[in-house]
Amino acid sequence: MKKMIKAFAIALLLPVTAFAAGGGATYPHDGMSADHGNKSSLQRGARNFVNYCMGCHGASYMRYNRLAADLGIPEDLAVDNLIFRVNEKGEREKVGSLMRTSMTPDFGKQVFGVTPPDLSLIARSRGVDWLYNYLRGFHQDESRPLGFDNSVFKGVGMPHVLWELEGVKKAVYDEAGTHVVGFETVTEGTLSKMEYDSFVYDLVNFLDYLGEPYKADRQRVGVYILIFLFLFGIVAYALKAEYWRDVK
Image (tube, rainbow, N blue to C red; front, side, top):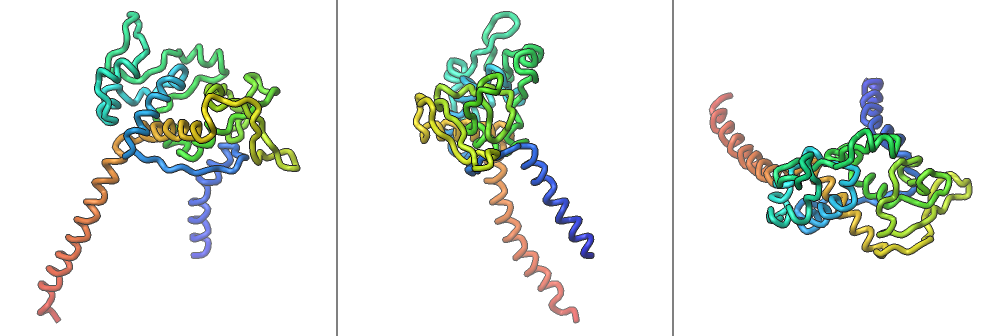
């Protein structure tokens, strides 16, 4: 029995251990909680994603019209503000099109050494905490080809595309020089730290929505199901007591 309990505990801890090792995180994490009910945040996140991410990354499991309907964006506004990709005919994509990037896989691999991944399920794969800290973890590193490294994903191949917003910062290491314990500002960005954190929160909140668009509905319906099961349990128990009252 003890061996079975030990094996079960190891099985539970293995995914957590593997995730921590795979992320290569060294900087202390801040947590975030996604909120699919905050439509304003999701709308801002969609704007941030389209303007800063879709040059390299797609979200090919989502369609623009579905996005607009879920987030309360009129379709004409979605067309004017979210759809910039042109198709093979040189025409702007339709509102029913998938959210694909214009970058081809071959070109992405040639430029970055690896094809930039589709971000439809990245929040479900990495988790919102990882993404939130990753986008806030870029720091100056002249030894890297693009001049930046990341405290959460060491040796990252992605450039710091948000550097104009955040500014440039350098890492502060511990006494051993192995772990990042903080950052120092080198160049101010166009956003304050609080504004940049809010920008990243909205973006990650949107990425979490992309991974599970029905999450808010599932949680809402789940509450009603639990209430129903509780009330049904009372009725079922009363019925059982009535049937078995005279049975000895």
